[in-house]
Length: 238
Image: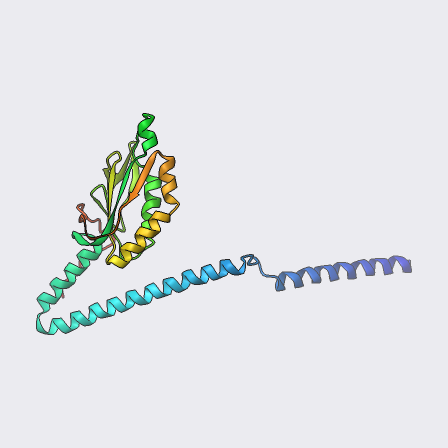
């Protein structure tokens, strides 16, 4: 009888000890472990620092605009307001842009022409990837096949045709124009695109991409569609 009691007591203590150990490990061990290596963490830190730098730059630009507006509003409020509206239209892509930049021509590959293969439109997925590659650079103004790309531009398939801003683009050759803001930025973008693996993706689709040398003047068309301001309302006059 004594042995039976001791055995049960020992078993109870064992279960209690096991549960205590499991609870201790649960409390002290994080829900998920960070398995990234040092290089991945450094890359993440670099991205965060770049984002922080961009935000600071944008805040500085807004402060300059505000100071300029306040200074000008004392002398000529109408002129200050007009200049502000023009700047906002330019940032929104509603005006034609002329400045340093480069042109990219997307054409059927020579192999496709020689073998008589059908040349189809550039797929929306490939076009979106290409635009994202270009937009890695800040201060870029871009048009594809004469259609201005802005923040809200949709690139999608509609009834089997690739469309930009709801309008179908032509079958290659297609002209891409990029205003880079300065010759220095245009040179950087040129070198980046020449070495980008995105060009190989075009080749798989029987297309070749000719990235032309930067020029002092490239004209990018204005956005010609009506802006949809679904979440904005006109301020009421006091």
